[in-house]
Image (cartoon, rainbow, N blue to C red; front, side, top):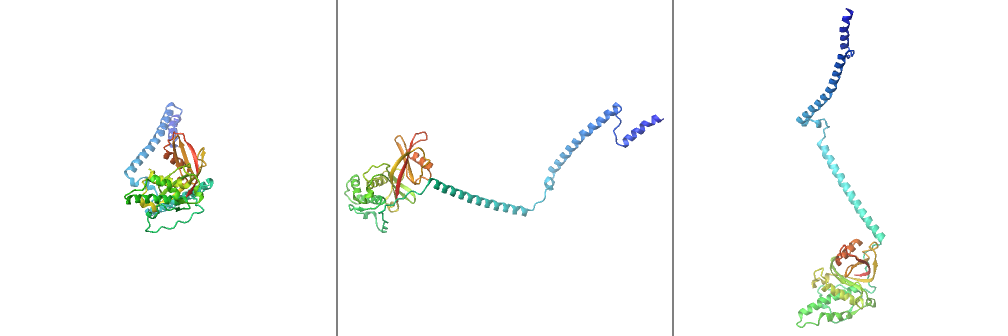
Length: 333
């Protein structure tokens, strides 16, 4: 009896204490393994099912989804924050712009210091005098036909040539008998000028006419082609009036509004590159075969632009081999 009653009591004790059944038998061991496998496979399924149910609930109730757990934000707070952010962005933009302008100014000043870049040298003749203002009712026809012309600077020579050119045109239209050919008149015209000996030197000359800072005509030569600067200025002025093809011809109504610049070439020297080129002080000539282009001092803001403009003016392509020449000149205004 003791042996028969011991087994049920032991089984009851095992169930009471939640202990695993005895593994002494093969069947009990297999049952325990099946229970562990069942518990291990059920827990992930329960977690997955809970997640699926939660996702479905969020889709069905978007207003009560995950956003419902976030802290509510006051609309006024959001608006104030947006205004504050815009103010900060505007102030940052102003600071950045100010910093950029300051940096550009610093770079420009440093470049001017390093390269000793200065405005184009404007040379005024020591004997030059201030031109007297012209009367309002005066016209170009008041210029005497054969009287000597007293001048003290090359700009006055260019002005007088400009006025005489249109004065002659008006006379040809108003008289039935035309004057002798213009070529004959212009050959003797430079002799009418009474000028200091300094203007009787020789050199290359360019005459530039402009209006409100915009070029209207420019003509001249790099190397001396005439006996003196007066004759060279007269010929360059006539070339700007009659041979300039890049701009519309100058009209008589523009004579009193044009500004004149005379550039006198003092020397031309070959250079290997444009590293030391100062476009505010020196001109540049580019030559390739029979083609050449000239940029005068002050016509470009940097050496690279000066080179490009000279090549374009001469029609020199990127694949052409060219030579560079620095033009040392004085500018009269």
